[in-house]
Image (cartoon, rainbow over all chains, first blue to last red; front, side, top):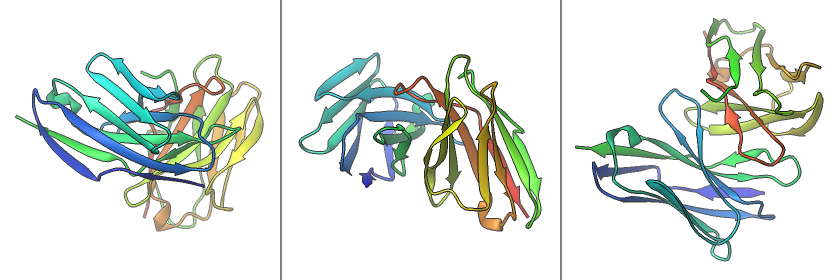
Length: 110
Length: 111
């Protein structure tokens, strides 16, 4: 089986940096996804990590440590539009369906 | 716009009824996934189809069924609806093991 833990809520200030953590347990690792979801809208893909290390993509970066079962999403130069839920997800073996964490609701305040 | 379309956007119905949700994947994507999102459970995988055949099943109730047609669109059928079935239902599509692209969802309200 798969299990994912994320903080439920976080608050950060506009222009700041925030790190959203995700810890997981899985019997077979096939990479880790991060998705962003604004309230009532569809999740949108942010990043995919399969090897250890940091992947940078503009203001967003994602880090993975397979030995620790740990990932984080780093958001820099926060903007008000970054207020959303951030979902950590693991693909299953074979069919690749996603198991999602409960998500971290980020509130960006002025 | 992800390229995945879902209809209807909203659906309000009564307990005991049956509804059909429709999804059209992105052009070229053979895999279609269905997910349910409720406030207390988060996003939960229901079922996956690949090129017309069922590939994986998640926590899908026996009252729910799905199929994928030759033109690759998919339908999710929900029957004997209960209040607890009220949720957002998302369809996603992908090219094999790549990232999944989600449709805008169907918000189902069971009264």
